[in-house]
Length: 406
Image 1: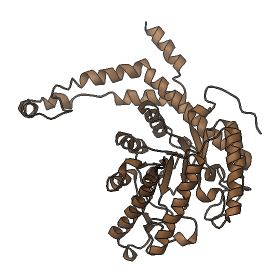
Image 2: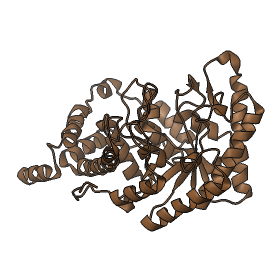
Image 3: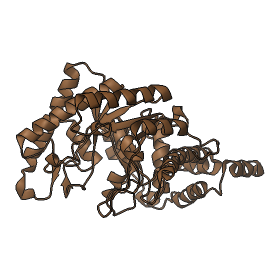
Image 4: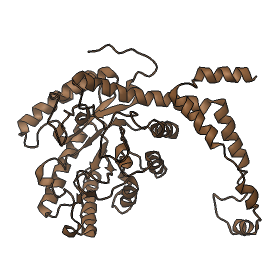
């Protein structure tokens, strides 16, 4: 095991970092090439991640054993896994279900045209929920990777959404009926592996949740790469999710624009967007798991996998530190203060409607020519951010400038 240096960015259990068994366990297979790494056992993953400072591991039901495992095989695997969790002080904050890998789901799971497959998908999910409860999970993610189409002529979209809703209603009713301490987080993706996937963005999921029987226990699990595949701003999606009180879980990774799902190491491609994401998560008070749904490059051996895992966690902590230094920068504060002052007070009480206020607003004479000439200082502000991110404007340098200004 390599000896990693310890510094302020070294991950700790209290950072709440988690990885899926399928992430560090990814063997490098892609559509054009077979596996390049040996399988890593779940117990080894638990041990190594714990040593690197992770808080926990997450899993699909079949990450612990094959879909056709006997009960005796399942019990043996589960017993060994629970012992490893206890030995290394690791948690399982989230569990999920594989409704995409087996050929039976090639036309979907909850939205399959075959009612027997829809029933099997719900049955499989019920067992996965029970597994999650046994492992102490309080969040259950539903990713509809096969819930979509290649041929619209083959499936009525209205009917498919009805089946989707019925399935989620069934599962939430099961949890409430059994009084289980479990919430659901729905994960959106626009395409791949299906040509088009139903409910393709976080915004679609938030709207869908409001049509369910138990919306109070259903939130979202947005993923960086999935929103970037749509050309959307992930930071904005997270802001909307937090505003709605629905950010139950989050998948962190990275993605080159305009590509298929890459699951790159967190912060490895889009530094500025990831900065604002981390800044938002930290300043909003989000207290859920910080889950890395990514995997190492196909070029790596097993040691490269652990370098990848450590890199994800360190990158988050580095950006967290940058967010603090940016917020404490005297010049940044100055620009933001000028913006706030120039904007004037909310003399029209726009946060609430009143008949008197509406009359006052309608009668006011705005000098739009004067307002239109205002500059906002965004160029300077964005340059300061750039200098923080590339490290030429450190906290020490900012402090020296503040002293010199005095």
